[in-house]
Figure 1 (tube, each protein chain N blue to C red):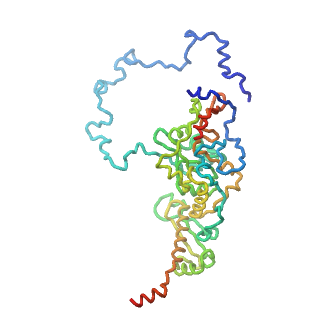
Figure 2: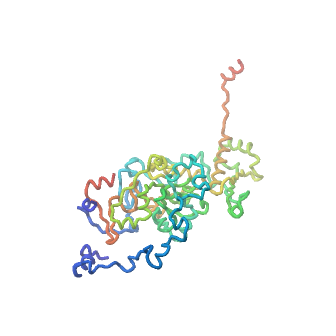
Figure 3: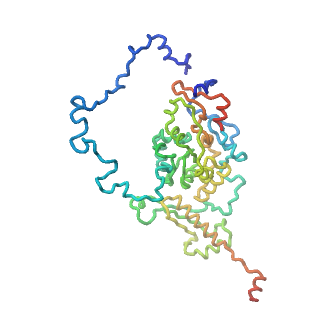
Length: 296
Length: 175
């Protein structure tokens, strides 16, 4: 793998050898500019101009959105109620069943020999997460707990107790971690972010409501006390009646115990780094203020 | 603005893939793959704590008394009853736990006798105590329910009524 001798590469060479750029030698790529359909001109845009035949439609007098001709519209028929208050702002977690996880691993869409992250799940098209629609991540659901038999190191945003038990029973490790909406969209679509050339931001800490969840070892929270996690694992093994496997004796021990720092979004990349996809390089800050900011 | 901030930048060619995880000596709080530690890393929030992924607790097995030795039990799964169509017909979700009560030395002798007397209906001819559960749709949940029932039985049988002391008896007689 040879490193290019001059930064800028082929582009700079071209600039040196070609004639001066002017309006006379510039042209858009074929197919880039599609001519717009101008209404009210010619055979195809003229005549009725795409408005239909007579009536409110053609005359531009249609009633407002949601109007049902006088019948009480749907959005007014349904009564308001307290439990629906703020429904569009409540955080949502896309469910991921153990059935589905096993299916993905069996088909080879998810690699169990590497830590499983939301990025891996999205790359394997296992889940679809929409950060812009108040999705805050993925929750692990126990459907398929009885037939789950994969040893994985998985990081989700929420997990039910039975799902945690099923993962640990097979010798895996499960962690629940919080991603704020910006970090979540980065996690789901890392490559478009790297193309932007912005430094990787640091992951924000959970809000007041979620701090108790993520500091509890029963939920295997990423901010919980490491010593209490083993206690929680043993209690769960006692409750569900299985022998807790010894992860330290595993050959994949190093992979299974890989965990992200609470401020880290991507494995292997720290906040503050800029990833240059075109030249396959990583730029790291050296200024003290930047370093102290990104490690705070 | 970002460009001016990164004026004194160090350009380093590095590989993207996770394939090269360096072996960390002195693993304490988990590895992040690149030794990045923020102010909120677990080492800083819990300085004296460390991960322990063995199969035993740190201070040895303290909970052997209240623990049920699962390898001494016979666990079988069969199909549950009730409605549910094809799913209930095919999926084995009912959990049944059996163990020979007389030879169960993990239960104290007097508690054992109490259990035998209280739950004679659950003990079959060969002397095995049978506990079943089909409360949920998952084998794991049903098994945990069976174990909880066994624990409840042991707890109920271990209850010792306080014997009134001599003073209390005398007071009662006086009154």
